[in-house]
Every structure is written in structure tokens, then in C-alpha cells.
Amino acid sequence: MKNVIKYMKGYRLVFGLAILSIVAATVMQLATPILIQYTIDSIIGTEPAGDLQFLMDRFGRNIMSIVGLVLGIALIRAVFLFLKGYFSSYAAENIAQNLRDKLYKQIQYMSYEYHTKRETGDLIQRCTSDVETIRRFLGVQIVDLGRILLMVTLSVIIMVRMSPKLTVYAVLMIPVLFAFSFIFFTKVQKNFKKADEAEAQMTTVIQENLSGVRVVRAFGREKYEIDKFETVNHGYKEKVYKLIEILAGFWSSSDFLTLVQSGIVLVVGARMVITGEITIGILVAFITYESMLLWPVKQLGRLLSEFGKTTVSINRIEEILSEPIEQVMPYETRPEIKGEIIFEHVNFSYPDGKQVLKDINFKIEPGETLGILGSTGSGKSTLVHLLQRLYEYEGTIKIDGQELKTIEKQWTRQKIGLVLQEPYLYAKTVKQNIGILRNDFEEAEIYEAAKTASIHDNILTFRDGYETVIGEKGVSLSGGQKQRVAISRTIIDSDKRILVFDDSLSAVDTETDMKIRKALKKRSKDVTTLIISHRISTLAEADTIIVLDQGRIIQKGSHEALLEEEGLYKRIWDLQKMVV
Ligand SMILES: Nc1ncnc2c1ncn2[C@@H]1O[C@H](COP(=O)(O)OP(=O)(O)OP(=O)(O)O)[C@@H](O)[C@H]1O
Image 1 (cartoon, rainbow, N blue to C red):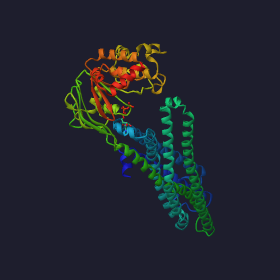
Image 2: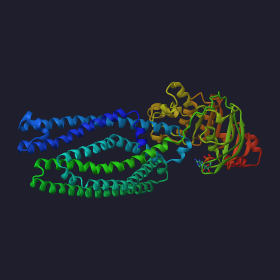
Image 3: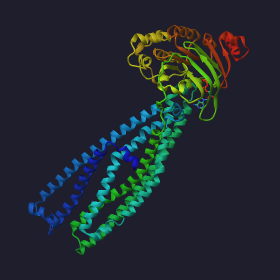
Image 4: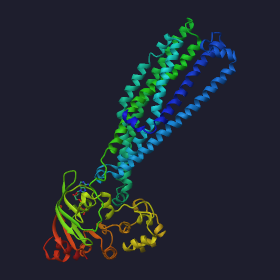
């Protein structure tokens, strides 16, 4: 409950107004049976008006005045119901919006490691369905809870005033009904959870399939994907079907209990009318109150158990919100970066315990180029990820003599441009993709960057040139074109002092590769460059080349020096020479 109240912060007054409106609407609703009883007993019949004598004095036996009164009450009730809906949804929608914003912001600042571990579908589910559960609880259920409690209390008070004896019979089944509904909905929670999880699984499959559409096509995995989806889809249907089946069982049995309760009131009430203990009007009013009472009692059990569901959603959301985020530490600074990089005894293991980098040592002067060669899985990408502070490491990494851990992460990433082998492009125009970093790039700067990355002429052949919209994740571009757009968007920023190309020239031909490197060298001669490649021709001009094998540097030196040694570098060179 504490958590729910926490979420209401800032909107408690609006919730208060919603509760006041529902109190007024409920009071209006409860007044109508009294008027019905008065009409039957005192206008149609001849019973004394009792508490409603003032109506008799004012309107006599004029039935139209009662009709007017009932309509007036209904109208006022409708106004209050509207206000209740207005206030509660205003508060709930705003709370949900703030919560979504908060979650989104949190997700942006959570560590890269967290994102590599979590399933996207599950995260999306938490930001949508779980927020929705909380919104519904705050917007509908919590106000309903107030309404039901008030309705039950007030109608029982009115019924006791009319006939204490019949009231006892009228509430006989209520504890049973409440207990039945509460126990049922508590037990059924696990089915709700299963259905939620099945939905999350289905979302994950859809999301993975759409993101990996190229792989699916390339490997002819459509049938496999369809089967996989059919399985999760069937699983989801089964869970929801089971849930609906159980719910159907509940509503029918609770309706049976309700009817038994109404039957008891009718039988006992009718006898009391015959013996003159109560009037017909009172019996009719009782039956009306009874119907007003039983439905909310069933709902009450449900609401209280829904509270459990809301708690699960709150916990799932709190789990994200309590994850540590990348924060600026007091000891972190934003030094001017020239581009000297030193790795000293750097070791790194992924959280699963596997040591990926072992005692890495090297130095690059500002403006120099470092080439990195190594077999698949030797730790090349991991090494440059450390430079971007995506993971914590052991040992020392220094930029211009300052330990990397004492430089603000955002600042480091701003100064180090990283181009990935498989870049993610946005579903925007080519121009927007190249200028994604800021809104204020001049057209000339965009063209210049594209020319350096040897993609300008290609872009001009696209149907709308620079205004061509790239399909989701750039599916309409070739791998090499995507890589070159990604290179353009990184090098456009003259603020970058270090550029890292993580196998990002792999999809372009050797000639274009050389052209790009030449243009880059001319454009960014003061920029320190790290190039990861499997192609020796790409690395040959680097000032220093390191060769990685199972996380260790096994060779280091210039292209010429490395060719002098017998080792992996020379072996690969000989092999690639033969292919060329
Ligand atoms: N997030 C991760 N969690 C656990 N292990 C990982 C993670 N990322 C990579 N690895 C493992 O670390 C090792 C090094 O991976 P890395 O991506 O650095 O290799 P690489 O040399 O860049 O390979 P490639 O040439 O194929 O890109 C591999 O064995 C890989 O399985």
C-alpha cells in the first residue's frame, strides 16, 4: 500500500476530489430505493410517510413530483459520476505518463551490461502492461474500492433502520460471497501471472523476429519462425483460455450465491409482509438494496486480490527503477582530450566469469593509428568496449595520462566515436541518420562526411537522394552502404578525438576500404584511430598493430616488423595475399 500511495504523490488532491465525487454519486444512488418505498407505501398505499413526511407536506400524493425528484437525483448522480471519472483518470493518466517517462529515462542510463542481459520483450512488457495495471488500479479500482465500502456501509445502515430482522437475512451470504471471491481471486493470480508471462514471451518472439528479419530470410528460417511463433501464440491462448474458463466458473457460482441470497430476502421478506412486520415498499427497497450490495461485494474480493496483481506490477517496475544507473561520480572530470591511449595490465572478465582479456599492454600517441587483428572471439570488440566504459575492467587505461575511470563516461563517449560492424540505423532519412548526433549540422558538413566515407555518390543515386528514408534498421541499404552511413555519422562530429572502427569496413570492397582510410587520414590527421579488421590490407598502414589471441596480445609492431616475424600475422598475410 505504501508503494501505491507513493505513486499517487502529486495527485492526492485530485484523487481526493474523485473520492468526494464518488461519495456524492453513491449517496444519490442510495436515495432512490427510499423514494420507491415511499411511493409504494405512502403514495399508492396509505402508510405514514415517516422521515419523508416533508415530501408529503410539500407535494401531497402527486406522483409526477416523485418522478421529477428521481430524475433530478439521477441527473446529479450522473454529474458526479462524470466528475469522478474525470478526476480519477486525470490523475491516473498523468501518473502513468510520468511513470513511463521515468522508466524510459532510467533505461537510457542503465549500464550497457544490463541491456545485454535483459530480454527486450520483457522490458517492453514492464513499460507497457505493468504500467497499465498500475494505471487501471489507480484510475478505476482504487476509487471503486472507496465506492464499494461506502455503498455497503450506507446501505446496511439504511436497511437496519428499515428492518433490523430482514437486514440479518439480507447480509447472511455476504461474508460467504466476499470470502469466496477473495479466495478465488487470490488463487487465480498465478493464472494472471502465467498469462502475462506468456504474453511477454510472445512479444519477445515477435520483436526478435522483426529485428532479425534479414537473418530469417538469409537462412530460410521462415517456417521455423512461424512454428516458433505458433508455439508461443498457442501457449498464450491456452493460458488466457484457462484464465477465462476459471473466471467463468467463478462468475457463475458467485451468481448462484447471489440468487440464493436474493431468494432468502424474498421468502423471508414476503412472510414478514404477510405478518405485517414490514410494508411492501420496504420489501421492494430491500430487494433493490440487496442487488446494489451483492455485486460490489463480489467486486470487493476481486479488487482486493487485484491489489496483489498491482503489487506484482509495482515490484516489476521497482526492479527496473532500483537498478543502478550510470551516474557522474564526484571524482570524475571532463578533461581536454588529445588522444594518447595507454593500456597497462588490463584484465577483463564478463559477469559470467569468462576471462576475455589478459594482461593487455600498449600505447598509442595522439593522432596515431592502432590496428587490431585477431581471430573471432579473441576479444577485439571487448577491448574497444572497455575504452568506451561499457564495462568495468581491472588494470589501468589512461587517456592523455588520466585514468579512464576518473573521466565522465558521457564525456569519454562524446570524444570517442565508435563505428560498429553491424550498425543500427534509424527509420529516418539518410540525411537525418548522418546528422543524428545534433540538429545543427550544415548540409555541406553532411555531404563532406558522406564523401569521406565514400557513400556520397551512392546516396545521390537513391530515389530521393539524401531524403531517402531508410527502412527499419536500414534494411533497404546494403551492408556496406549501412557501414558507410554509420562511418559518416561518426566522423561528422569534429569533437571526436578518438575514432574506433570495429570491423566497420568489413562489408566494403578493398578498393573502397582504402579510399575511405585515405580520406579519413586526410580529414582527421590529429585523431587517434583504432581499426579492428580481419583484413591485413586495412591494417597495414597503422603505426602499430597488435595481434590478439584468446585475449592476449601475442604480437605487436608495424606491418613491416610483423612480417619479419614468424607468427599469426605473417601467416594471415600470406593467406590473404594468395586470395588477392
Ligand atoms: N556480453 C557478453 N557476455 C559474455 N561473454 C561475451 C559477451 N560479449 C562477448 N563475449 C565473449 O567474449 C569473447 C570475446 O568476444 P569479442 O566480441 O570481444 O570478440 P571479437 O574478437 O571482437 O570477435 P569477432 O571478430 O567475432 O567480432 C567471446 O568468446 C564472446 O563469446
